[in-house]
Length: 425
Picture 1: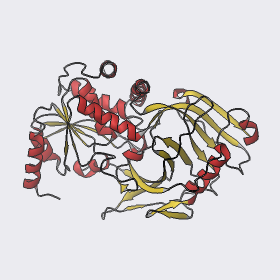
Picture 2: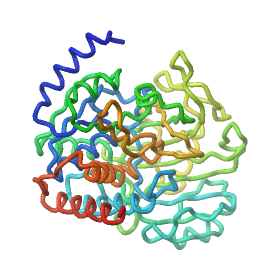
Picture 3: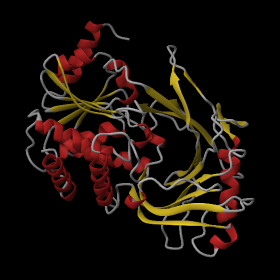
Picture 4: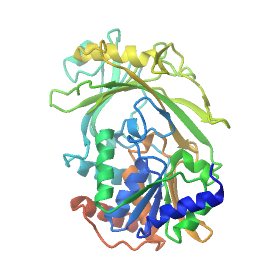
């Protein structure tokens, strides 16, 4: 870690290059870049201070604390703990709906299947999902109607199918960064180790903290935290799969716990998401924490593993997905390159406050926090970003110059901010 004088000098240099910015965003993950674009779109000149830019700094098999580049991004509402959940979710959905009409955005509608071999509880927030339809029956019967994915030995299936906005992350992140730069955004690559020094160098300009896991140490956040480890397999170059209506398809599939189980004995699901660069197969959801040595400690999935480029991948992620895909579409993983990946998701205070989204005054300087989303960062990204804009406006920290540069997208974001301001009074 840099000494404070060296840190201040480095930050001073970065801030000097951001001299014309009205607001600063800490962190370049999905939350940070979305917040920055939202601010830029309403006319607030914005700079990003980030340790790295996702997909530019990480290799495809990296173990890292930032999962952005390989997030699933099936953007339907989740039951996340956050203030104004439904409003934030609706705002995000409105932006994704618009972006799905922009050909280069990387956002499009997928047909999503969630399938269970044991009867599940009711689907959360089902009324908010597009084209939601429940089903149950034998695989043979269902194959003649909605044709859900199934493994060959399944006897009976329950589940639902719906449409969802899906962000193809390699394309989507490139799109967001191009928007940010098109609007005059400035990015500086630097690690932020001291909040006080950062606020001092910001010289009275509002700062938005989108550092995710890095925010814990920066702001001395003592709230309970769960760090969920996720293991995935990337299949580069594999083709997209489509429904009869020519819509890309994806699934979550939960077999009996004896086939794929968590440490607590509950069944774990596998998932399949096609992207422009291939397939993403997953996953594990292994709850844990980070120890003082920076190592993850937690409850691992209970199953045999296969070593892929140094990552121990549970066999069901490979074998169960392959059997489902072969049974459904005749697809095989034979002769395809498989890349293992381990990533981590930070859930802040999952049983209490949840996401930290609000204004904090430190040494007469304003910082707006926007972190701790866990697995719903992309799903809620636009709604939380617009809430940051609303908070900054309400606190008179910024004076938007009006819609700027992005036409219909800017107009939509300004309208959503105005709606949020109205509902807050």
